Every structure is written in C-alpha cells, then in structure tokens.
Length: 90
Image (tube, rainbow, N blue to C red; front, side, top):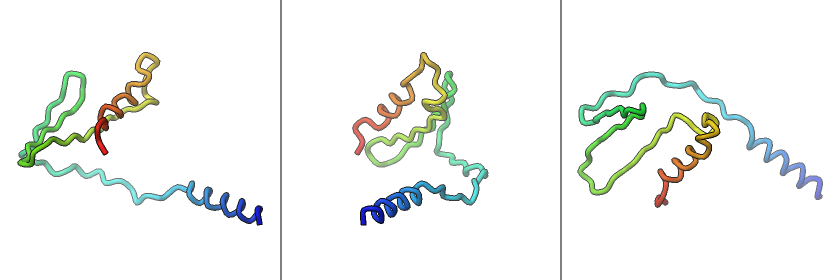
C-alpha cells in the first residue's frame, strides 16, 4: 500500500511538472489611445499615464530585467523593486 501511494505521488508530481504548450505569440502592435500619455525617462524607463474618473490610483509595473541580469553591485534591486511595487496590496 505504501509503495502505491508513493508511486501515485511521484506520478502526480511529474504530471504537474510537464510543460504546457503555447499557440505562439501575437506580435501585432497594441491599438493607440489618444488619452494615453507616454514619457520616456532619462534612464530609459517608459512611463504611461492615463487619467481616469474613479478616485484612487493604479500602478502596473513591467520591469524588463530581473535578478539574473543584475551585476554584483546591483544584487537585490529586482527583488526590492518587486516588494516596493506590491507593498500594501492584497
């Protein structure tokens, strides 16, 4: 009985580790919005601003880098950025 449960567990784990195939990527450009303001900062970061009638603010962050691209002097900055972006969110 113990061996059957172990075997079933291994099969479930291996099944969960299989790659899901994708149908490809869509490289078409997104439609342009006249109410969307684009700013490129001196450091190369792109900022998009959109006014909305609802109260509050919303942040969407796409950092085209991560811990694998960090140098030794930058170690931890990607992780810090992640924590600052989600600080106080649920």
